Length: 141
Image 1 (tube, rainbow, N blue to C red):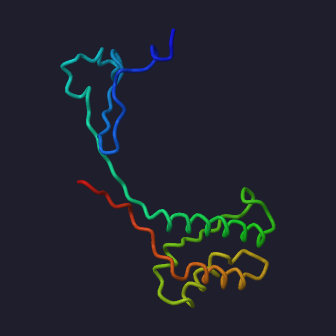
Image 2 (image 1 turned 90 degrees about the horizontal axis):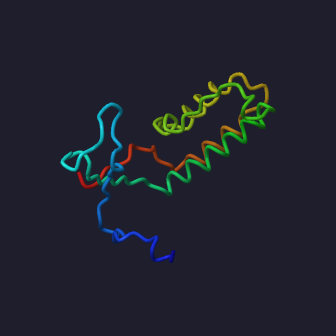
């Protein structure tokens, strides 16, 4: 059998084409029996475009990894053993003053026996200029 014999005859989708979701013949919901060619649900056209600000997401991920590393140092343990500490970056970004942000952070770190001032100061510096992540925007609707 040649390599050409295994290729499909369907053309490859182009950048502007739409995706069609189609179940394999005879496959359907449990108890629904085989799908017939007349079934309008068989070829379901779908197009979803979601726009994320990837740069902002990347900055957020790097910040969260840094926070986990710092908390591991502050609590002298691995992430799995760490007491539950909730630091909501979006919540901190909603607060307008650094004093209020620092106060919220200190409340979250109340159980930490090590000094947390350096961590708080560094975190506030890192979130400066960041913006709150909003829900992804949908285009084409």
